[in-house]
Amino acid sequence: QVQLVESGGGLVQAGGSLRLSCAASGDTISSYAMGWFRQAPGKEREFVAAINRSGSIKFYPDHVKGRFTISRDNAKNTVSLELSLLKPDDTAVFYCAAATATTHGSNYYIGRAPREYDRWGQGTQVTVSS
Picture 1 (cartoon, rainbow, N blue to C red):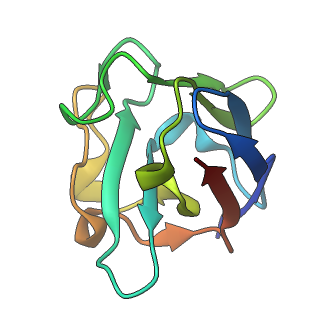
Picture 2 (cartoon, rainbow, N blue to C red):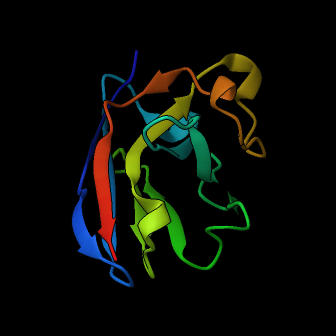
């Protein structure tokens, strides 16, 4: 069973940048599609980025496309999310997640909903001031 730990969150001004990291242990993530989500107080968990097993396919929703970049290093068992041109509306706890189900094992699989992921980190807080 894989365990995930996020880091890199903090307080930044609007327009600034952060790099979030997700360190995996207990299993090799090369077999899993990975994703990043965020959740602000009182709001539902929101999809922000996903990457397939090999890293050849990435997907972002329109509201973060061009500002967020997901990447992975399977040799180091890590996933990253680079945040740029940050806005106050980006303020949230950011979570990384793994899709470990066998049915999601294709290299072409990519998940865009929380229910498609079954392993989650504890989250890291990103706060963007105006």
